[in-house]
Each structure stands twice: as structure tokens, then as C-alpha cells.
Length: 587
Image 1 (cartoon, rainbow, N blue to C red):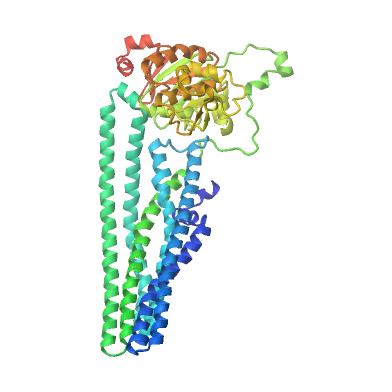
Image 2 (cartoon, rainbow, N blue to C red; image 1 turned 90 degrees about the vertical axis):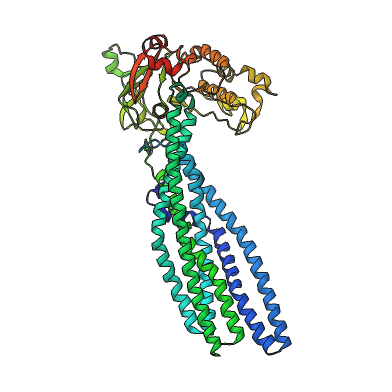
């Protein structure tokens, strides 16, 4: 990660390509061979005409025809083998960068600058990573295309030096001008990708919080917000494609005009008798061949580089994001500050009754959406929280330690969560995400891991029963030992969510945070889970962020968040009779 902190967008593209140079290097050599063979074809054809046909020399004709066949064979082999190395290299670079982005996205230390919606993470880890990886094409095709331009210039110099000089000197100058012209395109590409990511984030967040939005009657507003964001992305995409079309059109026109001018000069030289018929054919053929590489150079330097550079900025914004909590080298296990007074002479000599410390204490919690949120939860107590999608997601992220609060504190048994090493957060807080995932392994392994959770307060059977998973076990061929794949395709969405709930209930952490744990579960099963929730969380401080009355009615108290702050607090029954907004939200 340290390397990423000093990397710019262009350097990231270069580093990504260089990480697979053992594949891209032979690909480059083979594509150079292919382009040189393309240039060699009209040269050999010219020799066939001059030395075989015009001179009526049959042996020479046979020799040069054989050379022409050999050139075609090498041309085809170079291209096919080059594609093999290139595809392997690009895919490996894509995979390696995607793994880096995934590791950073899933890092338990979280993001210290701002919360990143699921849609943004998916966009960066998907299309943006792919564009950066495909930036490796710029180190293969342009090199081969430039080799073709230089070879064409050498051939033309050998025939008529003004033509060769025009190609060799005009090509680099042409590319420099195109790179400057492409800056406008790069800016448009960055804006378009940012707006597209924003619309994707809105869609992902709306889907994740669909139940809450429905309960709050806000689906229409969410749909309008997405429609507006999608419209902005559409306009930006059209503007980007228009700019790209203009760029490609102007570059193609300029390249064509340049090549036509060279051809006209060659025709004039042939009319004057300065070059032979075979050389005229060679010049025309070489000019036609070099037109493709020159146009491709323009597109690669402009359009491809613009898209890769814009995506590289977005990838770096994630890779270089500060951690919510920085790792501390050599940090030992976090020590409960109360341990200093739990023993020792001073404590024994002056025993004073200590006020019980709540299992979870939140004080002045402030984030991107939350404002001065404070509450405590005792062991065995269940607190319900009703909030909109943004507030709910941020609260779960903060309580789970995935996000570091700009202001406020979170303590577990008196220990500040911000001082806990990221690798030990799971020992204090289990913050189950809204999405339900499975891992390859048996049902039991999905609940307590391969070897079980050390110190777990309940067995897989207890946790599965609390999550009302018994009926599913009866349907599975091997019950709790039934293997599941990573996608959990053998289970329905509601069954996966029950399995995820069982996993959270089996974890040993003293604080449990659940985010819409029954959003995909039918009403009857929800009721069973609600009835068993109290027993399943008897020794833990539990926060349930949801709008489900089956769970809220069993909470000791419910907090209602509006505009990021606690607007109301009470039992479910009290709030149903005194808070109209709450009643509408959970109805």
C-alpha cells in the first residue's frame, strides 16, 4: 500500500503493465514482427515486379515469390502468437489489480476519509480496474505501430529520401499534437466515469435499503434521484463519445491527408522517371500499410490513454484512501484500561465501588450523515434503530469499526474502539452486513468456520435454531454437513440470510450489530426469529438496525434517527402511539 501512496495515474498504468512484463514483452516483440512483415509485403511485391516480371528473370521471380510466402507465414504466426501472450498478460494484470482493490475495499481498517457506497466500490473494482489493465495495450500496440512507421520511413528513404524524412519526422510531431488535443477528451472521460459511478452507487444503495425505503414511503424519491443521476451520466457519456468521435475523426482525417500527400509525391517522382514501377508500387503499398498504424497510434495515444488515465485516478482514490485506523507496528493485545485498577496494592488498599460499564457506549458520534448520536447498550439488552438507508449504513459501518468517526467515541466494555487493532475488532464487535454471503464449505463451516470459533458461546446447532434454519436443514441431503459453494446457489435468498444471521449469533463478540437481518425472510419465519432473539442474545449487547416490527417489538427500546440525529426514543408500543413517522415507517 505504501507504493500506491506515491503513485500517479500514469505511473499506475505503467506499474500495472510492468507487473506482467514477462507476458507483454514477447507480445510486443511478436506484434513488432507482425507490423514489420506488413511493411515488408509491398517491398517484396515491388522486388517481384522489378526483378522477376520486368526483367523476365524466372529464377529471381521464384526466389522473391518464395520470400513473399515466407513473409506471409511469419506475419500470420506472429499475430496469432502475439495475441496469446497479450491476452494472458492483460488478464493477469487485470486479476492482480482487481485483487489489490478488493483487499483494500475489504480491509477491516476501513476508510478514514469518507464512506464509499457499494456501487462505487463495484464500479472501481470492475470497469475502472479493467480499463487500467487494458492500458497495458499502450505498451504493445503503439510500440509495434511505431516500429511500422519507422520501418516505412527507412524503406521510403531508400527509394526517395524526402518521403522517408517526411514520415519519420512528421509522425512524432503528429503524435505530440494529438496528445495535447486529447487532454480535453481525458477531462470528459473522467467526468463521465464519475457520474456513471454515482448513478451506480445510488442504484446499489437503493436496492440494499429497499425495505427501509418502502417502509418510509421514499421509494418514489429514491427513483427520482436515480433517474436524475442516470440522466446526468447519460448526457456526460454522450458528450464523451462525441468528443471521442471528433478526436478519432480529426486524427483519421489528418493521417489520411498526410499519407495521401506522400503518395502524390511518389506518383510525381515515378512520372519523372526517378523511381521504377516496382518502387512506385512499393511506395503506394507501404503508405497504405502505414496508414493503419498511424491511425491506431492516434487512437491509442488519445482515446485509450484518456479512458485508462481517468479510471486510474478513480482506482488510486481508493488505494490511496487513508485508513480509519492506522496499523501500529508491534502493538500487542489491547488492554482493558480498567485492568490497572482491578488488582494491585493501591486497588486493594482503597476499594471503591465501580459503576458498571455498559457493554457498548456511543458518545457524540458524528460522520458523513450522523450528527451527535449518543446511546448505551447493556449486556442482554436489545436496542432497535430505525433510520433511512444512508444513516443506517453509516451507523453499522461505524459500530463495526469499518469507518472511523471524525467526531465522537465508541467503547466496548470501556475500551475505545478506535484504539483496537483492526485484526482484533471481530473479537469485540460482530457487525453483520445487510448482504448475505456464503463461503465454500459445509453449512456448519459457514456458521462457525472450518474448525469452529474459539470461545463461541453457542454451538452451530443453537445458532441455526435461533435463526429458524431447522426446516432448511431437513431439506438438505446431509443436513449441517451439506457442502455449499461460494455463491450459495443451493439456498434461496431468505435461506442465505438466515444462515448469515446464524453466523452472527454464533460469533463470540460481546457486541452484536445486525442490519436488516430478516429483509429477505417471510413473515412467519420473521416471527419465529423474533421470538428466539432474546434467548440468542442474552449475554450480549445487541443493536438491530431495521424497520421490521417483528424485531422492534422485542427490543428493550428503539431509537429513531432523522436527518442523522436521534429524534425519538422509547419502546415499540410507545413510539407507535406517539410518533406518526415511526408508525408509518414500520407499518
